[in-house]
Length: 153
Length: 153
Length: 153
Image (cartoon, rainbow over all chains, first blue to last red; front, side, top):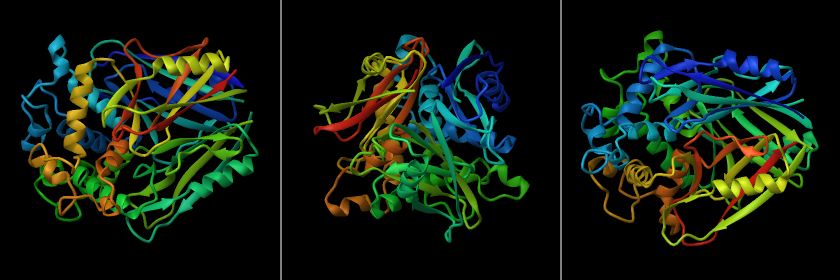
C-alpha cells in the first residue's frame, strides 16, 4: 500500500467562501503514484467543511443563504422568524461566552460534514460528470488547513 | 491490497425513492474476495445520497416529509410557514435560472451526505443489527450511477 | 496492509450525551501497529452519530438545543413554532406506530452522520489543533456499540 499526505492552507478574503479543490486532490493522487485507491479530503478545522457538488454559482449562493437560515450567525440580524427561532434561547450561542462569534460555523460544519472520500480508479478521481470537490469555509480570513491523504496501489 | 469497483445504475419510477442496496454492497465485497477492509458506497450524482438506517417504511416516510420541510422543493406548495421561509428569498432557487427545477435535491444531498464507508470483517459487512444501506434518490426518473469501491485483503 | 477492529460499548446515563473518544481511537491505532493509514469510526446503531469538533461544553449544549429544534423529539413539548412545524403532520412520527419513541434520534443520526474517518500519520491521529472525536448518543440508557477499524501499514 502506498500512502501520501498533502496539506493545503487557505486564507480566504471573505468570511465564508466555497473553494474548488478538485484539481488539488487530483495532484495529490498523482504525487502518490497510485492507480487504485482513495483520497480522504478532510478539513482540519471545526468551522469548515468539504462538499462534493456542482461548480455552479447559483447552487453555492442558494446553499449559503439556506445554511444561514438553518445555522444562523448571531453577528447579524436573522433573515426571518425561522432563523430567529433557530438561534439559541436568549439569542446568542453559549460558545460565545469565551469571546468567539463563530457558533454558527460549528453548526454549519455539522451540516456540511468535514470530509469526503474520493475514489481513485486508473489513476483518476472517479467522480460523476458534475461532481467537483469544494472546501467550504465558514469562518475564514485567517490560515486554515485541510488534509488530503491518498492510499492505494 | 485488493481493490474492486462496481457501478450500479438506478432509474427510479418516482422522483424520490429510498432503495435498499445492502445486498449489492455485500455482492461487491464477495467479488473483491477480501476478508478485511471496507467498501466505499458513493453516489456519482449531486442530487442523491446514501443513508445507513433501519429498513422501516415509517422512518423513510418521516425522513422524506422532514427533508421536504428543511430543503423545500419549489415545484409544489411549501408544506407550511417554515418550509416557505427556508426557500430562497424571492421563492425560487438561483440554480433554476438555467432551467433546472431540482435545487432542493442539491440541498438534500448536502443533508444526507453522498457516501458512506461500510467496514468489512471476515468477509461480511460489519453492520449493526438494524443497519441497512440505502441509496437516496431525490431527482430520479433517469439513469443515475452509484459507485462501490472495495479495498482490503 | 494491516487491519485491526475494536468495538466499544456505551451505556449512557442520559438519553442524549456527547462522549469524547479521541483517546480510544488513538489506542486502537496503537493496537493496530500502523504508522500510515486511517481509522474508520462508525456507530453501529441508527440513533447515534460521530462528530469531530471542539471539546467545549458550550458548543455541545448549543448543538443539542439546535438539533432538538431541527429534529424535534415528540416525547416533550416542542420548543417553539419552528420545532412544532418540523414534527410530522399530525404531530408524531410514523415510526412510533410500532411502539418506539425515538423518531427524532433517527433524524439526528442523519444530520450528524454516523461515521468519520480519522487519518493516521506517523502513528498518530492527524487531527487539527481543536479536533476531537465524539460519539453522539441520541437514544441511550442501553448498551450501544461503535466500531473502530484501523487500516494501514
